[in-house]
Image (cartoon, rainbow, N blue to C red; front, side, top):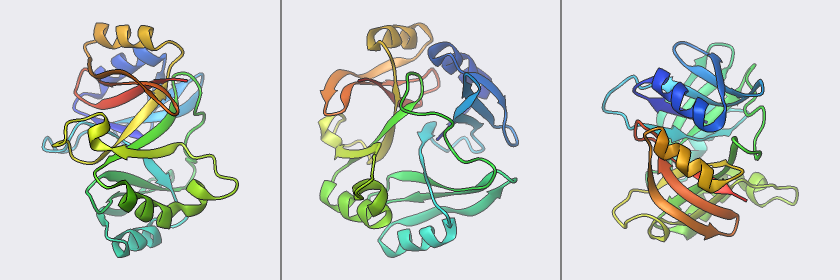
Length: 224
């Protein structure tokens, strides 16, 4: 997953302080976010001021082009056609039938998360949608084995937009970072110039708060 930010240096200061991440050059002007040397995310500069400041989660695929065609056939769209990212892999951007945007990643030398589901790393992605049944059909058709297979360990769920957000909020993915102490993490978000969008609430997978960083990118904090 990666965050597209107006100011990557400001993002490094915010997330470095919040999660204890360090950073190193990745590709172009992007940087890897590392926790104890393992890659956990990336920060990238926005190339167009009209683009949103967001966190984007990417699904791994062995063939981004073929998956893009399946997405289109299922009623979604390919927003950005597959393109090489050096020798790291092939990336693409897609949207589901309701417009929720997600990435595709065909690995090269970069396989994805070096660690996840631990404190200060990615733990969950929640799709907020207006039609959960349609989302089940769309994503189940694309990623059935990963989501519903006998050996599946999904870290992806879906909920009605109105469960947390106003009805006018467009469908979207919300990435969740695990934290050891939600109260401490919220205090750090405030101190670093972020804000709380949704105060802590209970879910089937833990206690969650939705926040934004100091540049407006939304994400969630999850305490198991």
